[in-house]
Amino acid sequence: MAGNTYSPETLYGTTVYDNDGDKIGKVDEVYLDNATNQPEWVSVKTGLFGSNVSLIPLNSASVSGERLTVPFEKAKVKDAPHHDPGRELSERDEDDLYAYYGIASSGGSVTGTSSTQTSGTSTTGTAGYASATTGHASTGTGVRGAGHDTSGPNTDDAMTRSKEELRVGTETREAGRARLRKYITSETVTRSVPVSHEELVVEREPITEANRGAAYSGGDLTEEEHEVILHEERAVAAKETVPVERVRLGTQTVTGQETVSAEVREEHIELEDDTARGTGRTDRR
Image (cartoon, rainbow, N blue to C red; front, top):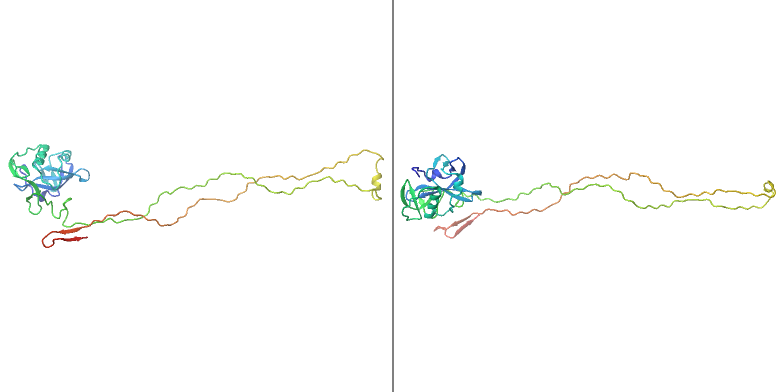
């Protein structure tokens, strides 16, 4: 590490920045050299939603408070060879990482799963995880911090159980539109109308003493014409526009019931105690 000495506790939770000051992420794991128990590598979750784990060598790195600065660009760190969490660095893994970052590896003999180089001295051993309680390297499984969730970042000494709750309410949206439209139709209407007319009636009366004078007036033999005008009534129709009613649109609120359903999830925590006293005991919540 070029003479730098850091404890795992100093590195846990620090934020890693590249040589341009861009934030890369938080330190998730610290890898120790088993021969020296000194931090050799740190892992940082990168990529979308922390989907990728990148290892960064601590050569020429510097720590200031909660800030760890490494002499590499953020893009280079993100493109580093992938390493699965929970698995020790193999010799090939470490050689690939040294070559990728342009750092010379020790090239010494290997008795463990990887060969590391510290302060220019060839050492043999395994690059393991840092133990938060002892600070020594461990092979196989590693503990990354007090109360640490082995599948995620450091937490406190308790596990939080959560569940989803269904919240229901209403939202107003447009259900449709209504409009009034006036148009014209035609129909035939028939009505009966009483009508009258005049008809010709010929009246004859004998000559009597009462009309004898009128009968003898005038010449003895003459030609005459009498004309009568006859009248009749005819049914006629006339149209008149009259108002019938007024129509307008309005709204009223009608309340009903609808049922909504959704799938909600809940976390459960179970205790698996395989100690001598608690063999076979399981506690679920």
